[in-house]
Amino acid sequence: MSRPMGSPKGKDMPPQEPSGAIYWRALRHRNFRLFFIGQLLSMSGTWMHRVAEGWLAYRLSHSPLILGLVAFAGSAPAVFLSPLAGVVADRVDRRRMLMVAQTAAMLHAFILAVATLSGWIQPQGLVLFAFALGIINAFENPARQSFFPQLVPREDLMNAIALNATLVNMARILGPSFAGLIVATYGEGYCFLANGASYLAVITSLSLMSLRPSRTEPPASQWESLREGFHYARENVVVRSLLLLFAVMNLTGSPYLALLPMLAGSVLRVGAEGLGGLVTASGLGALACSLVLAGQAPSPKLVRIVAGASLTFGSALIGVSLSRHYALSLGILPFIGGSYILILACTQTLLQNVVPDHLRGRVMSFYSLVFLGFPPLGSLLAGWIAEHLGVASTLCLGGSVCVIAGLSFARHHRRIQHAAAEAISLLPGPLT
Image (cartoon, rainbow, N blue to C red; front, side):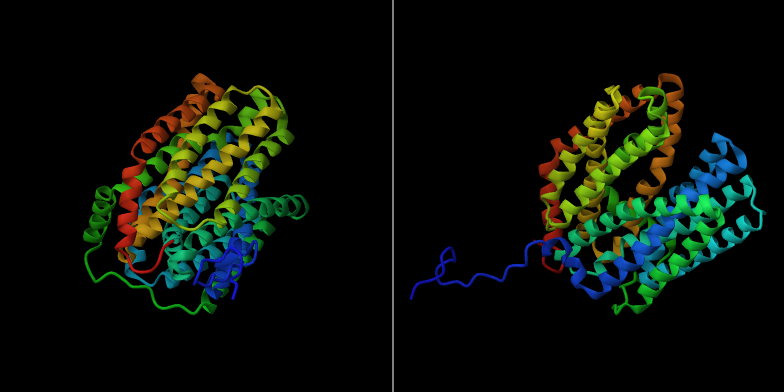
């Protein structure tokens, strides 16, 4: 008998997934489908909230200081509370922790809506509301980041994280579009109402999931638990290297978003419409790379992608700092947005696969600290430097630091990749 052309002799070929199915394979799992739908609605509401909050701060104060304070107040709690939140995430059921945090955020949005619609809200009060939401997010983020391995098997973890990044970028496009229409027609308060209602979607999705309770850490003092987490992150070469590189990217590179208005106005001279194009170009690059990542399998070789993406990120920042043409800047910004998403998603995937479950909440809280807390600190630093050196020089300086950090990481990437492969082999469950 003849055998089919191209099949190995004596072996049956494994069934192949339909073309394109690999990009959505995490959605085969009911729990992740529920999570995805709930998060899409909730994240769209979150972006509506952010746009309305910024516009309300501007309308009430016409002060750049208040705008900066509102943005900083929303992120500052992550710097101080994320490690503690990671300890909590390792000691309690993570789904329950998420539901409590989402319920608190929903009540926060409804109270802010009432205060805004009634005319009670003042600039100082808005700063306090932003600070309160920052506290909630400081606890919600580590729980959510460490929740992914409960939703999908390890072989689909990369796909789930990439789809989540796609979701965030879709919400980043949809939310502000709806917010602009609602603010212009009805006012900021109705955006806060819509955001509050959107939390019901994610709370409902969490309640419908069929999950085994997450393994919690044996009773110990919170200080001992926190010290154990810091010790693990410091001694593990993979975790330490990834978090240090991610910290540099967020402190010196990601503040480019805060400087884009000045770049558009004083350097490229394209005004508000041009600024919208620059932000969109960065978002499109991020969306494209998150879709590409959705087709990748989790592997220690992701370390190489992190190294290459960090060099691309820094180089593109230098390129946009040197550009004086709007079209050229539009062509460079997708590389900035795309390479940052590659760094973010690959770092998160490697951490999720390397770290044992009983430490995952604490390690992901350090990731959340860097992701949420470092950009506002970097924005304050970048703003101060830009006052003295100008926006172009500041972007060039930040990009240069990112390139140096990327080169250092790339120099040791083989050792980091080998350590990642060894750590993954010691954990239960398959990994491609």
